Length: 335
Image (tube, rainbow, N blue to C red; front, side, top):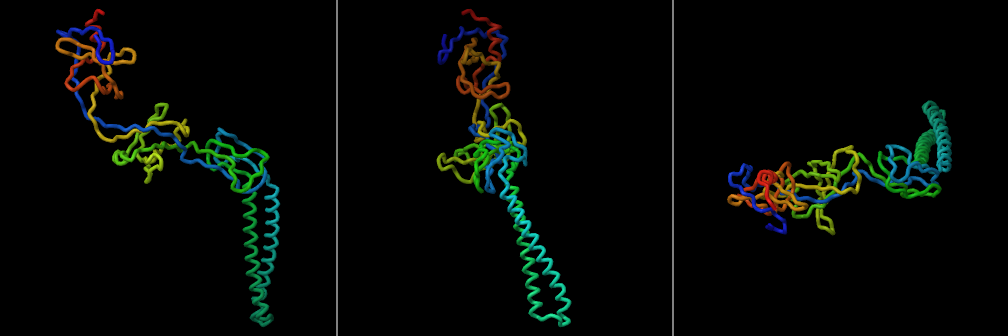
């Protein structure tokens, strides 16, 4: 006997006076989940650029290295910047000395002017000179700060802890401000990114939550999906970002994930997994027809706990054995 798609079936088993437990197949409503593919990406990723010119004398990290926050990534020659700082400090010292002298002169003139010892023109000149030297000292101080920062730029530090993904320069290469040096991403914050077709945008908003499944089986419930307010120019789908918990280990950007959320409800048929009789890649159940059990092929869907969804092969009202192998053990069949 053959039942559907060539599944070889043993002869029907007599169900008369049988002690095999049975159940009546019923359909029930269940959430209809939309399953989409997505990828992981780092929330923080950046390319560090040079902020001063010079020649690279040391590279402390390479591609795939784990970098602590604030660690020096590379060093640039600092002789020119050091000389500029020394010159700026000398100019500041000179401007400060002239300012001190001008302020003291003004203080003396302010005492003598009421006594008529100095002229109004001399007094006005002293006031102007005091203001000018004060501003000059401030400008010289700003130049010192600028030169000091320029010297700090010769050591490029990591803005946050992460992994180096690309190196754009080599030791001995001369760089200029704005030139890319190293690229990387932070490992502490990750998110999943999916593309949601336009017709499901409303369902996603209504669902309010998305279940993300990683390739290694880990699952996360994301309750705060970020839906872009515009569609992709090529796919015409909405980009959705799904933030994942902080400091989740072993998350790698670019890894594939599965995301699912409810779009509506549908009728499904569930049977216990014990009711299945499997032969290689094909599955069947023992269907009660009159006083006999007949092996009926079924097409299966998702597994839900101890039950499995039947997509085809059964309909509501059918009576099946709850344990397929109990049928064979209780009523062995001669081939």
